Length: 323
Ligand code: TXA
Ligand code: MG
Image (tube, rainbow, N blue to C red):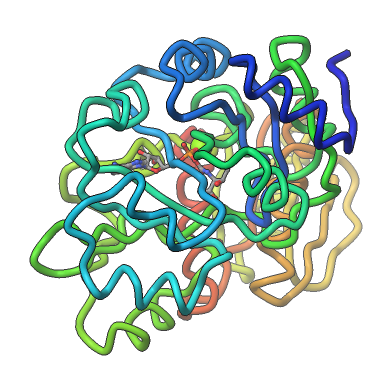
């Protein structure tokens, strides 16, 4: 078992010595190392099995620290930072030349965010630098939202897990690229698209599919359980579950409506509220995945702005299609 603790000084000592520490954020747990130490950052890639060209987000203690990592920072960045930091927003900016290539995947840009978790914010303040941290899961898998998920994902490979309890937001940060002529949301997340548009007061690009893959979180198979998964509208969900169960399959169902009891069908019910659903989604997918069902059926969520991030993560989880 890796060490799980709330000891900030121990985490600091490990990070200063080039160690890798799992840290809580309001979105998901991150796997952190000193962003100025290329060897330490390389360990993150090795532990996750992550391809080297996939850049990491640098976590900083305050908006002012943006200037340590980015250059030519547009007014829009300061505005978004004022509105949403600390919080689930990542800004893609032009990087300063000193930022190690291993952090940016060799790109000329860097992702920055101030996470909204008291323990990790205090850690960042005492550390005084930036912490490069992807989600603390193996590459392509479901992000961890509780310390025990990190244990399941990474085991002994991580030096320490800083225990900040369950994550309050439960899905990753919204990524906004400010290096193009129009701001572009590369990944929907904890901050709604509409909130970003309203703070910027101008159009913001977002395309749910298509376009070149700029971020690995945009690969279709990201955030996926190993069990095949299908998304179905509520009016087909239970018939389909019954049909599969009658054919001898063991079926897991994820609903946010009224659960039904059926032989051979295991039902998990999430809240019918987008923010509460998001908070519990990854833990629920983990539970369903661990049961080794033949398939998971997920009730489709509403096609409305507040459900956009949840819908996006469910689509990716369904990349292993159910036959
Ligand atoms: O909520 C979050 O963002 C969590 C917590 C730990 O902060 N982190 C997270 O990191 O989700 P990760 O590495 O799993 O996903 C970060 C995404 C990746 O899709 C990566 O490609 C993208 O951010 N990214 C990072 N730097 C980038 C850059 N310079 N240009 C474009 N995309 C970038
Ligand atoms: Mg990730």
